[in-house]
Image (cartoon, rainbow over the protein chains, first blue to last red):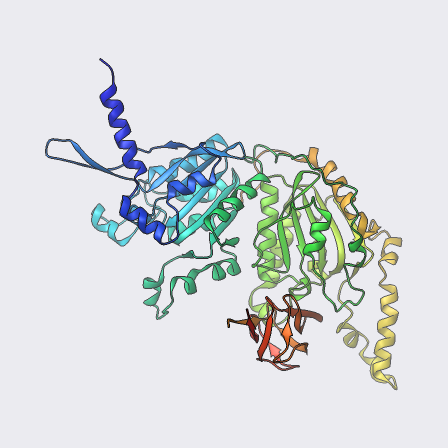
Length: 518
Length: 74
């Protein structure tokens, strides 16, 4: 006797799982311009690579004779698959079943996905819509008791949500409305993306309305809010763009902290010298310039992948390749307060340096920093507290580091341009300019008596400024060996590729000395 | 005709107005300059269009995300 009846039963139950919340719910999902969780997983992964775990789980309904009528599938779908041929874990919320909420969740599923990623040392992509299995008010009635968040037996998913950040690359995709635990799982990632039609919040508009804030989803937690606040790294127009961003982010990283990033072949000449770099920085120090074209000119062509563009904008951050070797790239943006570091910029620096340390990425910093932000708002936002935290992140990191001083290096924020206390490479462009304090504004205070005594105070001020500027030449600093090298900016790419070759064998797999905090 | 409000990313003072109501501008053309942290930071047009209305004057202090001008596009 064969096992055909059971095989048929398996096929029937599998079909029920694949039907998700049913035709009506799937149609509603599509009508709202969103894909189903299964469509998302298939588009994210390499073709036909998804191997699902737990497809049969759900809530079964049986007739009086014990015959199965229907299984409503659990609203968490997970398994393993491949991205660019490399294995990954993917876990997604099924919004067609009870709106992705806790009422239809089986808590062991998202937890096993996280455990699987950690144990198999594979990246995990969280495809999030709804409350991500978080509790709802209704749960009190369905369970007959109120859930203590993090109570007995309920801590492990919360632990993995953050602990995996120190183990494997974690990517979050917010596709739809994301709230509560779902929002926490999206924010607790190395890289997060949301579509511009999505929204993320701790609690949604109906709850917030009770605070007297009448806001729709977009006004409360739309992409504009969340990318500027730094809670989400990137906003894209379509779900396919979100999948492409996740795939690209992972291409720069190792599969876990126990490995180093793959080095891809590069056909970009390491000696390529872009003529535009000679005139990239204006001689007039009050004039700003665009840093992004400078980045493009020095890294492998088309390899720069920016992260968190709208948050902490004085620093441009992202991943790039130098002769195929992935690096973390930091660069100042003079268009944002001249590149001065405010509290948000410092938070961004901490997060990015921690990312580099976790995954053994060498760091390149193209620096133009006139100091920390000043003024009342800067004091109110604890700029100096966040500033010394950023400085600590630099000083604690152990990955190879190379700084190129493009223009300004002033004050304490200026000092935070390479890890202190150990050797790293540093080059200064011809346009480099540094000091404890910028001259502008400082001269009047320091030379007040001399200026007041002069018959023409304005001329005296100009004369002093001229005198000090002569002394401020970076060549005088180089004479004293306060800076190692002043370079022709066109040589930057060649020197950075040389750094990459030196850094490649220094990358040391293993857990970082400290676990990353999201 | 759609109208776009151009805002400043940074707080500072309006240093120079480079366009007036009625002027046709191209995408990325500088519209005005904000002085912030002793730097001259241009604010450019997000798209081609015609300047409809200026909302600030030279010398005026502006805060982050403050509306600077309205641009008619398309």
